[in-house]
Image 1 (cartoon, rainbow, N blue to C red):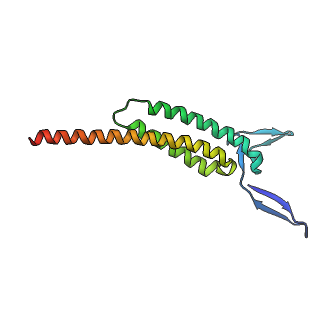
Image 2: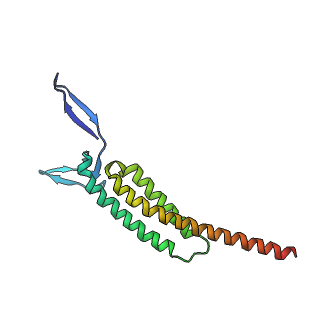
Image 3: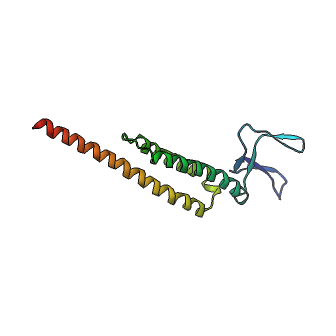
Length: 146
């Protein structure tokens, strides 16, 4: 996004590139003063923070529900735990690339603490499954070698 700034000295117009948070959906059209506006971009971080927080917090709640479902699943193959780890990493990348500039550090830390706990739990269960399979294979090979 660019903002138009008029120079004080000579009166020329300059374009300054700014990054902001786009409100609404990509294809949404808003009507402002009988004019159709396709993209509304908020460049002030203080103004964008509440809007971004609501959006990210909604995504975070959905992720927590999905993780609770995946981590309570009795899957012997470990696919649900891998999926949980992938979803956590995907959420972190989305936050890092899109929303980090607009969120407060304390909000990011709160979400991160809970995700770290869930990530450790998924890793531990995945390791348990892996160790169990290794022990089964060792027992099988021991039985065959006798």
